[in-house]
Length: 408
Ligand code: HEM
Image 1: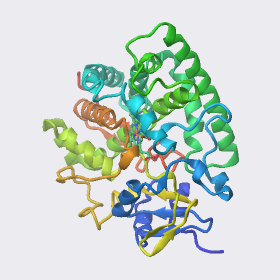
Image 2 (image 1 turned 135 degrees about the vertical axis):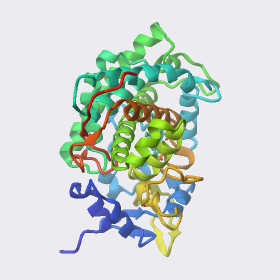
Image 3 (image 1 turned 180 degrees about the vertical axis):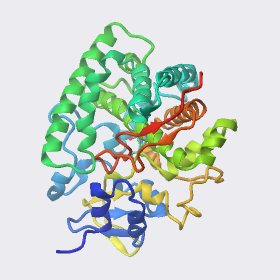
Image 4 (image 1 turned 90 degrees about the horizontal axis):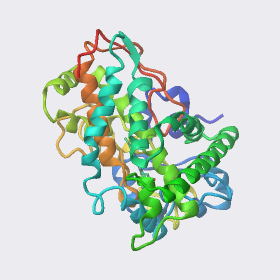
């Protein structure tokens, strides 16, 4: 039996708590070809170059037929087309432009700023809920419910429906990165149900629009028209899932890192604006998305002495790039004072995360409140238990003890 490759070990759940030494092994070669023909890249410069290379595709139909089983199956066969995250130009750019009309500059430049008081109020109420306790699971009480409330508010999804869509999102996320046939089946079923739910909601908003993003998407007639049918539901499902699953990890990984670095926790309590630099370093040091599994080359590409072959799956390991010593000095050091902090946490190039400003703000607010209000917080389990997915990496639970909660 041949030894497991670095990438096989990275995917192995046994290494979820500490994948960092494996990323170092991965970077020993610019490009790896796995036994099944998948190419894997872990260096910062190489990943960044590929994310800007027009010969790289996010559309699964560019995979060779023999890799069809490697491609995520259509989200809901016969019903949903690929969402923008899995399309290429020019289709990608059209879908993205229409979506961005509801999301920020230039059409709604104040959207995120205007949301700040609402976000403050939500996180204050959630932290208030810890009063009278001396321990809590920070994932269940803060890191998860906060981004869920924010994205439901933003999209205009009724908050009381959160348990329904959470039950659909879980199988979708579990299949991501380590897809067994059962996980894919559960994922496809969940996608269909989530799309049907979004269909009903969109119908309702067409008749009775409000200030939310779903209403905006179903009523706005921009120069490129509206999102209709499958494109609309695929976009809504993407926004709903991308809009909270990743931020949960940023807050949970962030709080874990702060409790492991008491000096940073102390500074967050006392230094104004420290949260901005802190969250940027957290994004680099403990990113929520460890790799992008959904690329392929549309032509052979020479990189570091290897040919990335056309039509083969290509995996870009963002978390490894973020710790690449060839690009980032002392990458294993958690240092919020870094100048010119560069990282790949939100990707790079045309698919760069549309929710980055929102995610940054959510993490800044949540971590600052936790730091200022929990008295003497301590980790109960280190490392904590991790979620199944090697891609969306973060704790399932984060039990923390504390000696009371300061008032807001
Ligand atoms: C910590 C939080 C977040 C992280 C780490 C994150 C990470 C990423 C990454 C790495 C990509 C690039 C994917 C690719 O190149 O294939 C991406 C794209 C995307 N993200 Fe985020 N994201 C976060 C939060 C959000 C939020 C809050 C939203 C929406 C409200 C969002 C919506 C999207 C969308 C729609 C795309 C696809 C953009 C495109 O394909 O052009 N994300 N995100």
